[in-house]
Length: 340
Image 1 (cartoon, rainbow, N blue to C red):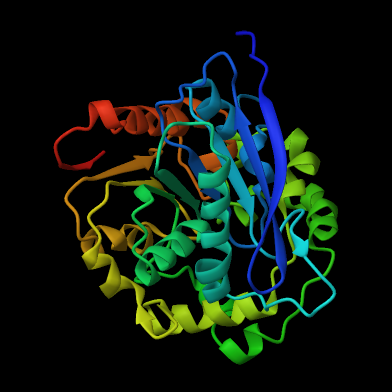
Image 2 (image 1 turned 180 degrees about the vertical axis):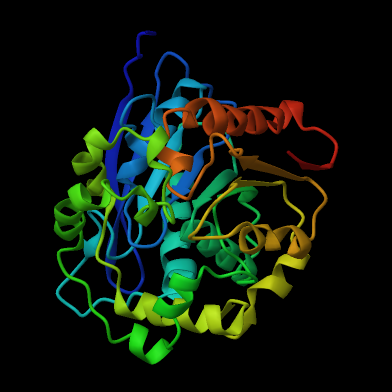
């Protein structure tokens, strides 16, 4: 077993204009850190915080893999996630997909660019699940030149395919916005012993054959209570197929973007089916696009496997690192569309 190097982790906060203090975590390896690289900002998804990026049940976490490859790695908790909390006595702004994209992400990007120890004047966004959709939304609303490349992992854009269970759950924006979840983390911990006896119940979200379920209690630290307003936004989005933020059709707006894009997908994702995650390929304006579909018939991947499967460091994180290295400022390749 290889020896893991020490990492330097710095926790910090940044305030949004509407009253939230967002938590960020900066991770780097002093021995491997390359100041000529760009900082990476990881954005978490629905009903989760950024903990899972710094954790792996049996191997090397996503953050550690990236840091040991020489990158400065940042992860943000959006409003209502993790250690993020209201910043003052006044009533903070609500949770919504628009606020995530128009308020939280720009605040986090500003903090990264102010706090980076790299020599770069830009960064790479890595949007995971709904975090990738939020990144799409941010770039649709604001063509920020500091974001020079984008990675999305299991991220929906156009809901061309919806799992039947999700279609039922988000069938009505009104009802979806009325359901309030409390103590979700504790509920998941309590139900999990029952669920692992019937793996088919979990197959929508994970292939349990490649995840160390003995560490599930620890993994649930990433679980957050889904917000009713976010549920309402998602239900409208699923109903309309395309995401609209502040009157902007995100799909149409992405046709104006030409920065490098790396799309990572699970071959049997029940949360974000392949057609829904691949929809960005037809919407993207640039030609430098690479797609990685992870999993096969024998070793299939679902949504969570991208981050915590036993072989995720080899099948997911290593190709991501290779893509990032190929697009470093001194080694930028010619534009190409690749699907693997």
